Amino acid sequence: MKKVTRLKDLAEGLNVSITTVSKALNDHPDISPKRKKEILDYAKKMNYMPNQVARSFRQQKTKLIGVIFSDNTNPFYARVIRGIEEVMFRHGYHCILMNSYEDVERETQFIDELRGLNVAGVLLTPAAGNGKSTRLLEQYDIPYVLVNRYLEKEKNTYVALDDYQAGYMAAKHLCSYGNENIFFLNFLPEVSSSKGREAGYRQALEDCGVAARAEWIIAGCMNQNDGYEAAKRILEKVKPPVSIMCYSDNIAIGAAGAVQERRYTLPHDVALIGTDDISLLSFLSPRFTTIGVPKMRMGRKGAELLIERIRAKEKADELDEESGWTDQQILMEPELLIRETS
Image 1 (tube, rainbow, N blue to C red):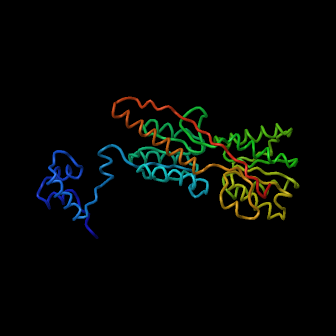
Image 2 (cartoon, rainbow, N blue to C red):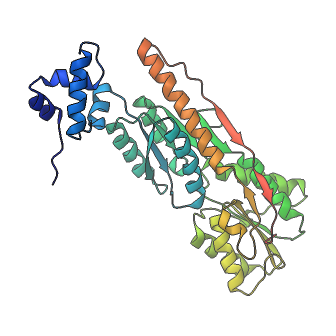
Image 3 (cartoon, helix red, strand yellow):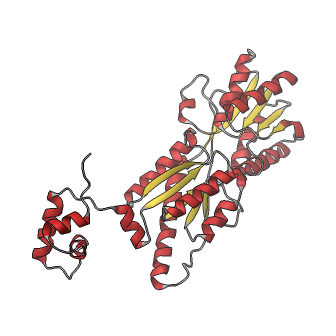
């Protein structure tokens, strides 16, 4: 195994102190240009690579950003992360990606681990709508921004979709079909996006003169399998035509599988709409109707806000003052994309 060159090795090779080598590598004014060049040339010759982790801990700051989402294999989060990484790379930061899988304890454990790594900040989608992680981040004085969800509408800094409007336009579109039954396959009920989309769904039905029934809302759908099982139960009890609004495209994929398994057709027997605009679904047949979400823009904006917050903290720390950061809440506009399943 190739030996790693250390500061001590450079000092011994040049017969100088470790402090002298360190000052030369850090462009300290105490070192003469001649001596500095000699040390830098020798360091290059020895393939010396500074230990950035150790340096970061000495300086009490790093260029690491924690990104904690529920599942980055979901195509939705993959695009959000792409936007985050574009901005962070441009500003010299590196991302550590972590998946909570909606597990609150797992998420808080990640926060503790990121604190140990001395991260500069955290981008977070709070698991299951909990506020435990944000309280930890505030306790540890780590700058953070929430992405795709919030805890309270007027609190914290976050970038999210206008979920009320997304739910409203999806349900309003389904109302235009005139079907007697308009179901909603929703996510975890305690999550802000679930609450917003359900509120929009209910308001759209009311505006269309349709009395929403409790059994039309099926909560707790988290993935394709849940969408499949929920749609299967619906079609076992209710004869088409029916309409099904889904919290996400992932759930809609499962629902479509149940529809096709029973030999029903989209959209003649079952009108189906998802949310997220997963790009693959615009090429399949039938092409999925969905609510478009500016995923990469959401990631970019979340990253930009976090960098602003980190800089505000660094400036305040230098002056030994409070950061004076003012929380910002940004809601992005959804878009109705009518295709072939509705």
